[in-house]
Length: 406
Ligand SMILES: [Zn+2]
Image (tube, rainbow, N blue to C red; front, side, top):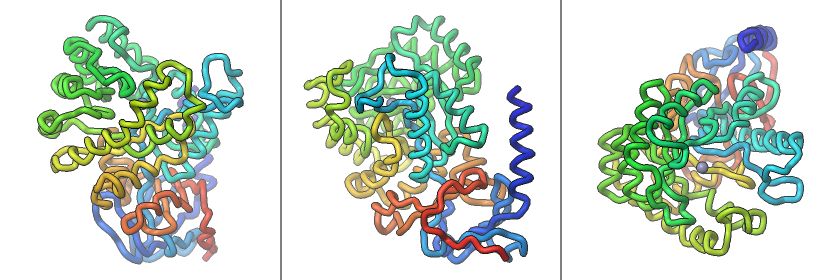
């Protein structure tokens, strides 16, 4: 069935977009560190056909010269399914399913409109349905990758974990998510044993799946690195020695310093009283804002460390994924161009999709976003995505860049 649907979709796209699209740009970031001036992007179907040259005579043209153009942004850590219910509180199991699904659809639309054309969700079973719904091409949303349900220290011993990794792959997971430490609200100590981590990450690698690991303490991040896992998430207490080891082994670091904790604090009453969202937890998160920022600054000193872009967006945060960029540049001191490479080509590489998304060049997916302002000169411009194209389709055009017919 899936193949038939994909085939039908392909036909629809070809019919709807026989004419090429031309995007006129004045400032264009390619996502790999280059800035191009006064160029055009020619889009055919879902992909970028070429940069520069003469515009095809039958093209539909969008004039984006008043804006700054970038590859679509990527959030490698966004819980797109997590939302507030109709009462405004963090949704739980008793919410009627239609309401739940529509709130999740809201999250998808908000995220795409903010300029994020791909997200990785670690993970909930429902992500698979969201991924497929977006892939059908009608519901606006970013491309979704998902781990489905995460694995934890209580999932079982090494053999059982290997089994579960195989099961996730069968269920359609794009990657494996592993919890190797407690939450930042509980101190972040290592929970999974080294043997468990080696089993889970080892089996994932064997199956060609990436394994991303929630790890706050230095020990848990070190164990994940030695087990051959793909990336360390959060890492609030990671030390210089462990950052060195991660850099040496090519393990990605996904710091989340600009959105997740701030969003919890801003929406405290909506979370309070659920699970470990208690006074102690919130007190910890309050201190955590500076703590994770300092860890990020430390990480930046390790020039070989691959710092990717993830927000850990949860209920209330979707559509504000850009705040991570602003915080990294403004408070974390990251070079704006490096922050831009992080949110585009480097994150794409970490997803194993560097040859499809995250940069602008011939043959790449036409995931293109324009900002009102230049995020490299004014980080706050990251909040002003005015044009969003994903896979050659325009989803947002707030700047009303002229759409003339030549
Ligand atoms: Zn998370």
